[in-house]
Length: 492
Ligand code: GBH
Image (tube, rainbow, N blue to C red):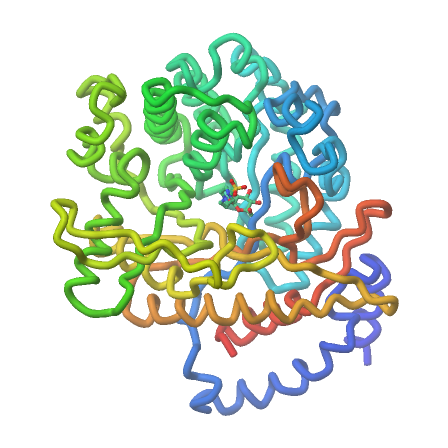
């Protein structure tokens, strides 16, 4: 009775967003005590994760915060890009986004009502250093400090990403952004400063999110900020400067963070999947993993650009020193992997030993045209990274999908396709964990609908539906699904 009352009171506090106020709860609630009393039920046990497996959600600063001109924040390249007509769907911007800058407490309650144990958020560099370098803005770090305290007060462990693409515009203007090592140096200083301020409470830091997204799409294809189309030599140098920045940040975090602070990265590595799970395709897919990730993850893990990459780029290969390679390959405590799409690979007779198999036009995808469905990616990413580089601690730092969500008049979103997507990917993750690949946690992308970069607000990735006119959050079917996964620590 009193539990019901408190549930209802909670429901009022966060409105329709509270999962516990919903009709879905009844079924879950009545099933739970029975499951606890009879743990060996093979049906519920089959896809069970190990005790202590960490479930959570991920977001990124520019995609959710808004408050673009508040708290002394300087402009980022995404402010400039999104305010440039024609760059983003409907010319939408992150000026307001989910208004999480003001609503972070409410949003942390959304996490809590899912039962999330971990949360991956990113720090906006231009909130901390509005000019990219120089004196830190005290209001900037204070915001994240309050977010961290609020998470901890709710029993959720914060995982902090230092760069999720919102580069200070000042660094673009002064140095050409990642085209210059000055930006790499500045990133190291910024990372060390944030670690010095938050590592008393944040024990895991990610340096960069997805090198290829901010470099290849931003500096080669012009699709993401800063919207450049560089020639191959300049592009490869920008790639090099970005991995160098990662290495400098690893060192700075170790120097300035509390002892025991763990450092890694969140990379959307290219994930080769053997077309058939048999030798020699498996071998080919492992070789493909090293070669297709040459510019980023491979050089970070191996301290060396693979010959195939250097040979292929020839005179356009990046210029670097032996010292650079040492910095870039500074040892990590863990590797984070953003897992979305598969790359099917087969063995062949070429010197490389593998061939990428392009998807047929009928290959199924989610609402984002690029989001080909390949659940096995969530098995092969940990397997390749574990087997090739001997990584001892891994996280799935992103996984999730866009759906054509529709809010019904009575306030539901029946995103059965997202539930299908998650169930299948999680079964593959379960296989990786069952084979003892050391994946410690999973962050679902994303907690709530948000600014989807060049797609603006047109594509929705959230577990919570956001009505951008009212900022009301509504749990989708997938939120109820994920809550039950977390509660059972199993995929069903
Ligand atoms: C992640 O990128 C990001 O980390 C996250 O911020 C984002 O919201 C989420 O996934 C969902 O997209 O337009 O055809 O050139 C995932 C990797 C790389 C996929 C860029 C989309 C653009 C394809 N993304 N890619 S296209």
